[in-house]
Image (cartoon, rainbow, N blue to C red; front, side, top):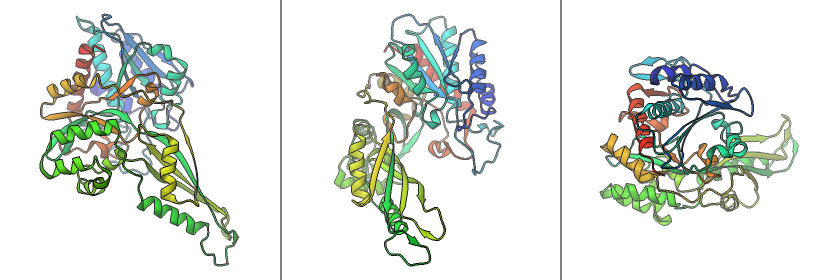
Length: 434
């Protein structure tokens, strides 16, 4: 069977920081761990240094294939503070420390364990099970999920549902512990905002120049917000929270459903739901600022690159119109977005089973649907009509802040949490009916 701790440590010790990624060494190690158990992984790549792995075990033909996917690349650790080497995978105080411990090498190890258990079970799963270890999720998926979906779509014929990151982690709200399962995510949209002003000699005073206009633009982005939009996924999440809370918290959560009362409610809930605002509206944050190339010349143009994240049920054109109101008519806006096609309609048919499994294994928590503010490889499989669910259940201690540990210094995962997570995935494989 899969050695959860040993395999995770081995994967963390392979530096797959993206860029450049270079995931192939980790992909081969992961594939070898599965091959030892008798299955036959296949490596597929656009770039030989950035290989993906796929393996399929047969079921009884009673259900469609179930897809499980995760990524082997990780984000950089530059300028972060770590108590332990991020690529040493040390076991300290019951935790495995290192980059990728949560995002998401542990998730792939749990999937591998569940797959092998199912493969060796006396009763095969109802349908085939596909496990996909991907490159390049952290930079968009060009060498990973996008490549697999666009160049090898036949590998996913018949698949209706997939599981991957992120979801099923504990979330404390109003004294209750919830388990939010991702059913939708926001789409990345890159905006450029351009302002122009009078050029001239740097020794001369200037009023309302490019630098001042950039300052005004940045202030507008900081102080103003796009309107509230309640998507289907957000409403399902709010319904679950409202049904299981009471008093002021319940009133505040219900107020989020209405644009006129959402603002005060967000302020009231900010301590418990600090990032909740991002599932209620489109956001665009300044990440790159460029203006001028010579000390003694007032710049004639300034450009700000904005990291835009768009809610489901919205178009880039609609988001651009919202953003134009925020920045004002004198700012020139342009955008580009991945051409992933329209997402499929929300398919909630797998959620009851996921909720049942979570309730059995984590009886003190309440499963609810969840709109992820960020983005995952799930969007690429959505172009094939596959509903992605964020289902990486970990039994984390109450004081552990999952969202604060991802992409941050001191990323780590409790050893004991992985066994229960692998059990949850095994139960899904064995009980999946499509």
